[in-house]
Image 1 (cartoon, rainbow, N blue to C red):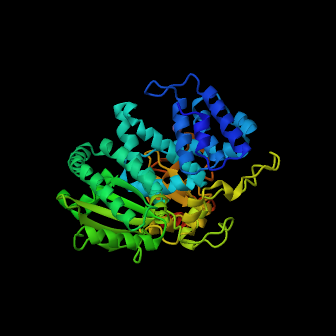
Image 2: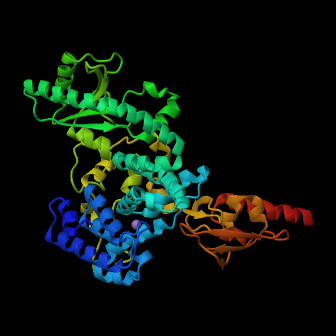
Image 3: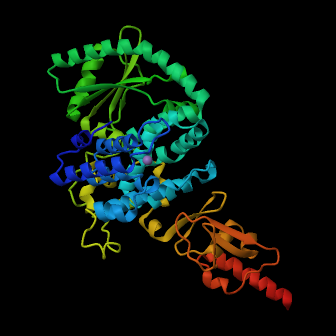
Length: 509
Ligand code: MN
């Protein structure tokens, strides 16, 4: 079991307050989940310490880590919101509530609605810290999915692949997105995963020994030129991303060279070019495989020098050379070459990234009036790399549509509700069952007899909220009334009501 000390050890220069907070959340959670076990038979508390550890590794604050330790306490134990608020304050309660709310959203396995569900997920989280806790929670659940009953595994893994991993990716947290994908892949596509695993293992085993030898010679060659400040690592390509690559490019797996890649990470850009020169001076590069993504970054902002060389013992190795900042950017989605002034986050944020800015912690203004003057700890609570995402101008091409739907006004003006079958419908805020019915189909609107929200009968002018499940009852004889024009918020519903009423009156005459 991970100790509180270990978690605290991962926080960058924690204050006395931070230490006390994490310690008391740790004790509280341990007690609250005392008799509670996971599918594996292990104490449930392990899940909470692992989640907290992931959050700490991603540079999240003590507040977020504490909320991570407590994130299942409302749902799974006797602990009440009041108890949490009294002991840990409104901010931590807000984060736990957010995580609990997101837990109620379920992927129902229809591709058609994945994009809506992703948006709903982000919109409902309201705060990037809630999203991070949920992602860390999911990461640990995926690491231990093996213990979960078979029939649940596939749904959870598919949800991870379709919802969680893309959200992490769009936030620029590739490291997290990649791990989620590779954990989920074998559960969702067992045959493909098996095939690729065999294929890469074969290559891996064959290449690894050679790679280690190659790495030694590279280090020696660099040292000879006086370059000693290098960090190296090698990476096995993510199986799921390999799967996607093969699907998209219809490539022969034998053509994929970058199953294993060597990374050389250095302090300065000039070091990158010097090292490329040294390597090419010793090992012959494969033609057509030399890429200068430093001078010409990929559209997603990725930067590195890349080359593939013959190592001399019959194998080829892809080499990536980049600076520490470029590396962090690639893993965490940050543009570190941009200068960034602390506290300026709310200032000049490009419009295309308003949606992430919207997820930065905000002052708890309304709810705290009664709870002393305690407010959210504004932006100091968000790690630098998240702030830098906000500053970075072009995260990903495929983000375009996503952010279209997530502009800041989007959060204020749209809500997402479900049909009983799990279809997601997005509507303007304060929409009613009338809008919902007409957005499904005019026939349903025109024959609406009543509505249930979350299983309860409601009047047709009831304002709907994010995550509501709306069930419309229809009757053949039912007709729209002019009164509904007052209930409807969408122009399309109003339009359909008017035309139905007109038709009826024309018939009468
Ligand atoms: Mn959990």
